[in-house]
Image (cartoon, rainbow, N blue to C red):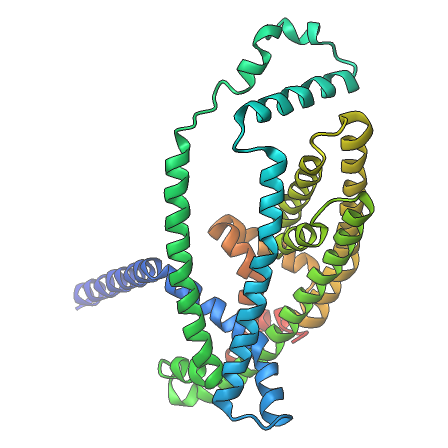
Length: 366
């Protein structure tokens, strides 16, 4: 009898493990669908106030309010994309990407000016690299064969982007049209006696995440203003577009500001690539770096603590650890969704395990 119980226990454990593995494999295979659902859910949270305003204040029918909201959001997205066209054109012109000889000359000039500014002589460098071959060695590894592969990558990216955009718009439309659609879908997997707890959890999650995403938009706007002022002072062309792009990188916690800062400095330097390095390029890059530093100080000591404490009601150190752990486990995507996911988990734990001492301490601020 004992042997039979043990055997049944082993079989049950194996079945559970196999089931977990299969579920994990299934979620891995539909990863893109889950991403579409997550993006659509965020857009629905952001667009919901507009739908409610159109329905309650302007007396729009529900479907018409959703369509108008979708058109506004899509127009905003396309408008943002259109802003980057002049930036790409200008930077392509500055770098002379289609003129390899001009690019080589610019790089060689920048190299010589850098050596002169920092007091290094070409003679000292030539001990390792012959002066007559400096220009050749700088571009020795340049293989123009990457161009066809690069173009294929662009085509595939555009194709995947088109499918993703259509999927996200389609899902967002129905999320906005029927605000209870996702909730009803989740409730099908929940026992009847737990439905009220789940409904309460979903309402709290929607409220907290709406405030969180509104706070993120405020954070990005503050950085955008600071970056724009810095670039305007320096005199960089397309300052608004560059500032918007670099502020947008801050969606990625900790890594994003570094990527945005490096991008802004590089674009600043390439905007004045024909100017003198010591008197023009370097000072302008330093001014931009100062603007970046001011923006990050304001963001780290004022914006982020306010957002985390007021929106998701979590301590900044708690958020820091969660983001790092999510980043180690799931990469950049994990870092982006760490705070919303952690907030949702805390709310669910509070509703379903309210009597647990650990849960009480973890969710005491909710």
